[in-house]
Length: 124
Image (cartoon, rainbow, N blue to C red; front, side, top):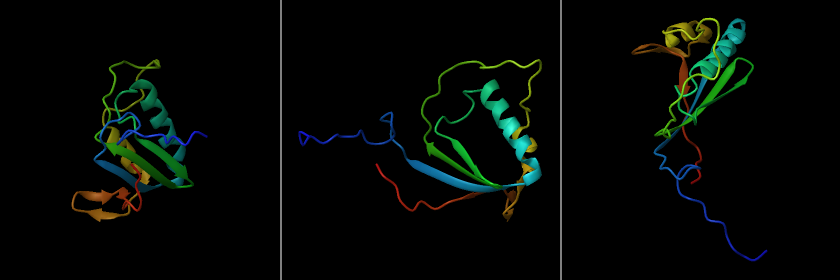
């Protein structure tokens, strides 16, 4: 090795400034798992530019973990990647998703479905 150190740009991988990193957990009803995956697959195919591209969801049994960075990077304009015989993604996305979850508790605005996690460690 030559002893040179690689320098990373501050912020995200694309050099943008990240103000907030958000991790959350939710509990999915086991009998709703297939439906949850189906709707999310359809959403990413029908409307690929409708969500934060840093947003990811992972699952372990009925526990879901999500991560995103804000502000979100600029999205490209674009249409769908796949066309079904009829649209699958519902107009009332949150209304359709709500029955998939086991609420953590009732909050001021109703049942709390996603519990936000505290940041323990963050690297720039």
